[in-house]
Length: 248
Image 1 (spheres, rainbow, N blue to C red):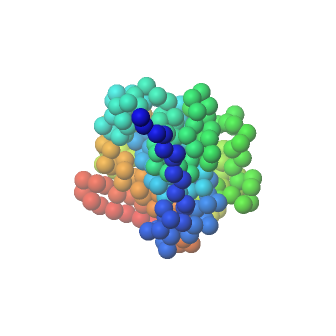
Image 2 (tube, rainbow, N blue to C red; image 1 turned 30 degrees about the vertical axis):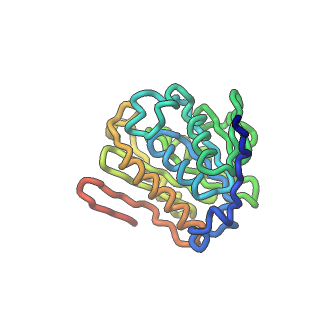
Image 3 (cartoon, rainbow, N blue to C red; image 1 turned 90 degrees about the vertical axis):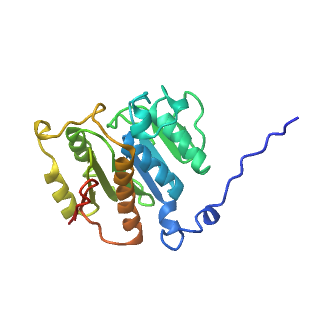
């Protein structure tokens, strides 16, 4: 006969022992990270933030896990057909029990929301970006369309969002934009361009998991720098084939 074992909740100070002298626990605790897009980049951002132990997570994506996502995005075969936010939220719970397990047909649990739709003004009322001075609101843009980035930025730029991080990836090329000051957001607003000038984007573009993981790591590093009090680097670029790197 087997006996069910209650899930053990590990205290944050214990599970974060190896990072607590680098990442201030008080800043982690009061951070709400809104991750828009749970594809190759966003899924990896979610997992890193969950392991890091940010206060709460809000996940947005309207898509489902499909067979062509297996190698390029890193999903489990058992997750195929699930809404990406549902599968991502489950993984966050498995990584860190601080994030509750969302029941079937629901979208929220302790410290996590998973919204199976595009980000927009009609999003659940629990999400009030920049309205609570006790919450450090951080937004990660992990979408694959330049027009979508611009629309999202225009909808949040006047809210009291502490940090906006945008990751862009095309084959071996990565660019990560970070902004938490007005002058940085003014610069970021100049990085949008007509869709006709963009490289191939969207769900069918060729991509690899390792490049997406590097992009995600650079995005999470921008948040790490922010809560440590370091100035933001408004743009970091890297080509993984040539190993050329730019920043400024």
